[in-house]
Length: 438
Image 1 (cartoon, one colour):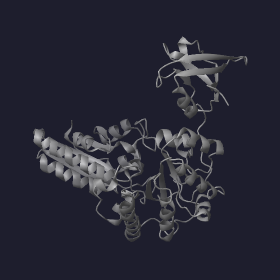
Image 2 (cartoon, helix red, strand yellow):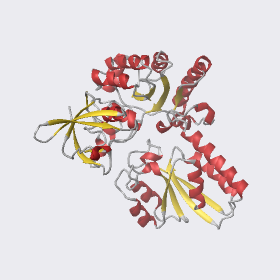
Image 3 (cartoon, one colour):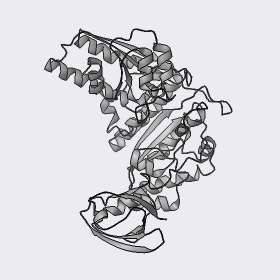
Image 4 (cartoon, one colour):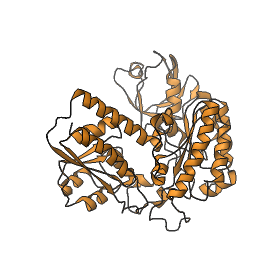
């Protein structure tokens, strides 16, 4: 395989060597280039021999000498230099399959690409990873790799993921671990299916990957109101969530005694559902699965407390009277209220309203802030006095930070509610600065 060059940066090594847009990069130092991982890996060589092919099929070799981590300066049609690989599974809990019709196409795409796992932290099932790709991960020591395991029972994994290769793919895990590839594993738990004894089996099997096993997160499934034609699943209750926490904490306690680190964690959602207090920040070690909702609230609370203490020492809370409304998902409402109570006690001119938005769009079983839509914000807040500003977590918006999941824009929400809307990063200082209007 070869990749077509679409541009060459001005004054770069590539331009100085006479490389032209439209040429195809065939190989680097004798190694075929398939995609961005090949390109970035071999680009770090100081001495490079690039085989290029022009549009007529004629090949030439260009030699470059550069410092190790300098870029060549070549541009390609996409950041992967290839098409994204889609998921071949039909997991019984898949959130994409529970989306309503008529939404933008990108919301229905299920990626399952090992390159995105390394580059962006995406989770992969290993069901569509070729032998060449497994060996490349090992040879290049591409680490960490994030894996959606769900269960280590091969037969159950096939049933849950509706992919006949799902059980066989588990055999890749010990190969990666033996090569020293760090693994972050995810278990999306479904009540009565892969929790209970099956959860304990999965944790026990994954322990065999130590010391390459970096972390394991247990995450609850999400069930929307759009499950027509899909397997019947229930959501976690206060009691069943508590059972998951007990299993994860007991196993983690033993892991910490034996290996010096906890390794396995239940997601914050389980603690909220079980009405259990969040563990302290030190419980989460290096926060290896922060983006997976593991330890995010403990981290936020610690950062917010530090920011408050710093502000009190610096005397920065003498502000003009200010009232703001914070909108979030139902799951985090009480937690955010507790933080802002502390802010109000430190700043007597500050008043904060916290509103939990019921998810009418996906169904009220969906309680996380990241799935709140603009339409639900408008429907539940229109006509209310929201004060000087409406604050929302930035996870409600897509990466471009311009649209909600239902394609409603920030500007539309501001227009309908008659108040400025400010997005807030999931970070304590950012939250404090936003409520104070800084």
